Length: 242
Ligand code: ADP
Ligand code: MG
Image 1 (spheres, helix red, strand yellow):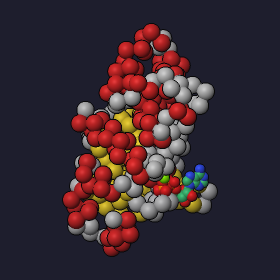
Image 2: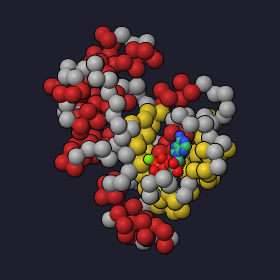
Image 3: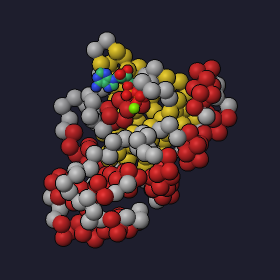
Image 4: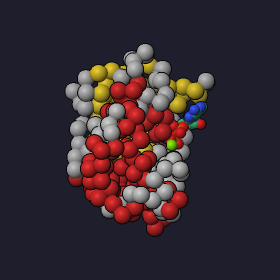
């Protein structure tokens, strides 16, 4: 059994069948990239795994437990499954470190004194120690997104879901955020990443899944998907974005 096993997941919004039977497994320490055209269902799939959207059918088995089971309390699952969005949504009236401490204080009942050292270590690890006490508007977009990643990590998730986290950034700021992901990957963090950064996916992904109209049309190693795609739709998508 894999760390995360997605089996036969479907999801509609009204008549719009957005996820049409997805099977996907993620091993511990793997980085899986979801690629595909806008509207292919990448965000919805990630939101289903984080229980932000209920699935219509299928199983999402995390470490042996079906978290898609109706009626299951989503809170413990969301502690284990971290998520970072395109819009970093830091609270503007709180400093970077206050933003990061908020969820562990509220959800895990940690005190600022307990959090001081581990949180400082996270800021240090990602080169932001000197910015801890700044308010978001004093930080660049890349720095804010790195704080948002630190905020997710402060909850000590077992898997991190990242949805187009560089799409809102100026091109010159994308690299510093991708560097954080490289570092997390070498630390062994399990990650699922919806991305338009094909070069990055090719470089770091263990597995690449091409989503097309709510289905995984093909998946494989970066070499398989980028060098020798089997499907015409994958080829034409790659021809448009590469
Ligand atoms: P992607 O992330 O690959 O661009 P999405 O998962 O955002 O794709 O969207 C897939 C489809 O689901 C789109 O047709 C989108 O309009 C639709 N959709 C996404 N979220 C909602 C929602 N909350 N309500 C209705 N339709 C939605
Ligand atoms: Mg999306």
